Length: 368
Length: 116
Image (cartoon, rainbow over the protein chains, first blue to last red):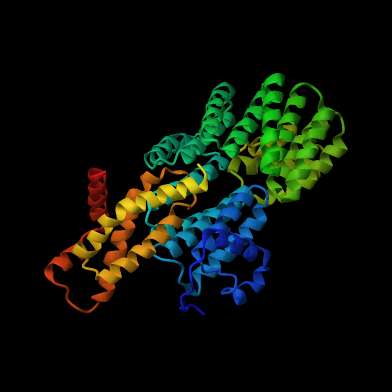
């Protein structure tokens, strides 16, 4: 029943206690939390700040869990209306949990869900003290979603405006993240030289800010770019650095993408068997964390290579295994057309190679 | 930047901004001394948390000055609007309450800038 809960004020907790409470809250099964909300300090802004931080850290490695958790906290704060902190804190945490849920949905290729969460986030961020900063972070996620929908012209037009906004706010890391989107679009529109130059600048920027996450992401994209150009030495050099940083960050998605990049390199170098091994390593990492879109993309890439090796039955099995996940993902119209052609050709037991390549082209995405 | 250094910078900004905020609470929004002190305590806790929000946590503390003053003005204004609900405030207070908190916040930020 909708309503407003009023409680006797409790003594505020410290930030260290908030982090501890956040761990405890996340370790408690979701269905048990509302009944223990006071003991778990779920309405404490310090706890919520800790929870948001922990969920953000797990976005790339456990997007499915993060989505469920962010949704739980969003619903918990929304109804019945709860008093959280002072000033804009309730609105901030509602906007933030919606933004985290939307980001997780984007990573899971659930674009319609992502859009709905971003709309919720926007509505709550309208009431925060620094709504410009909050909306700018939301705009970044929306642009990333546009990259995935292949709306490249719009992204290239809007990214500079967003960078300007972040620079005015002195949010340099966020501005650097926007430059990633530019680099990714350049990769997608097949301008590898410009993309390499962009990612080298991002790498330098990330080093100067001391941001390992951005550094490793830039290196991962450099691996993929150099690999696609057959520049083995540069690709391997970047992959060594990237693996070190991803392992330090315990980031499985990053490790998977390096395997993917090495697979690309081996494919370009004419070693399909070894390339398949590298792709399989990437696939098992993605599968373990529920990134179905990436698993399916790699199944299509592997199918393509198996066809090169004359193993058409194995290729067919790969495509059939990929189709259910691909069909769940909202695709751009060209992707839907390629999917239809591929589905029909597989039913006829002869894979349409052109459709297969077009389709994995829609998935074969760089690191964001 | 490590957490302790950032907390120190947040404390430093609060220490410099609080006299300006106190003066605005009392002379502009007409909070009592007790209300002003309570508001400052809550504002201080809020600002420490605000400075650790996602995205904001990497921005320099000095760039958060305007947000601090804006939050203070929203607090003072909301409190008086709530207190005076259904009653008529005098002309000066009514003028203060009808003004956008963002305008006053900008003035306060400039005042702090001039005094440093």
